[in-house]
Length: 94
Image (tube, rainbow, N blue to C red; front, side):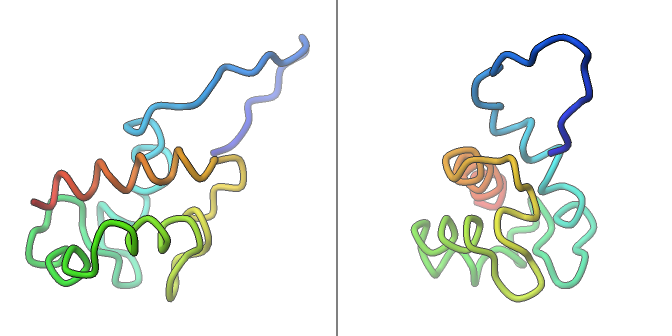
């Protein structure tokens, strides 16, 4: 989530869509399984995580787990944006 440099004053654009967050933040590791990240859409890899429950997956997305830093390293993402992105990945794993 890198902010673009602009000369004019920056006006808050509002929350980013869950798909934007998945593409910009999550996909970097979750598309290729970097450092053991479950691959988006891989039901076998996601099954043990889904068994932990949605609340736990949301917590891990926001707080980080193992090699994944908090919010996947996105310092500008809100908790709600990360939770929505996690929900997108959960839906693709079912």
